[in-house]
Length: 203
Image (cartoon, rainbow, N blue to C red):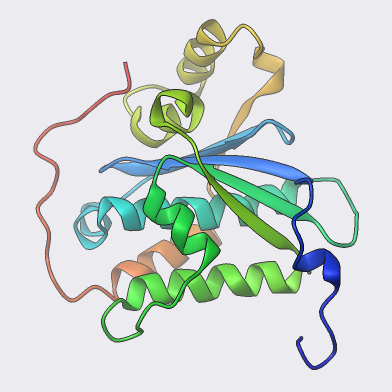
């Protein structure tokens, strides 16, 4: 890509063409994009809950959310600019600059490479921005409220946000390719971690 030349539109600050919101909990991850109206969530297996730290879970959520929402965006401009907002300051930093050691941090290294390939394939640039957790309500609920059905989550969120209506948000299943990728990431972790002692709900 560098040999062929990189457009200036991919390296300068521009107004985002799409903004996504992601979050994680000990139990799972989720994301939402107002432009596409699509929310998604995934509950980790017990092995995956143990394999990833909370910051790693946030990192995985952001990378998946940007790729998934960019695929759903019907804007066909040549150089998309994707902004992800997360309440994890570590994730925000890793999305800006990643120099993870493949031996010491194999999961982080793979997430960084996977995300970079996705951005390069669509000739996109990405930005990251910290969003206080109290403002990241939609993604927060999607990442932890697995005791609620999709319909119940939509009803709760639309009652909390007057600007949202049931017609403006739908929740989809995470594609199998992403689920398989998460499983492959978990296999890179050699140690063990404790499972969360109790379920923490958003409300």
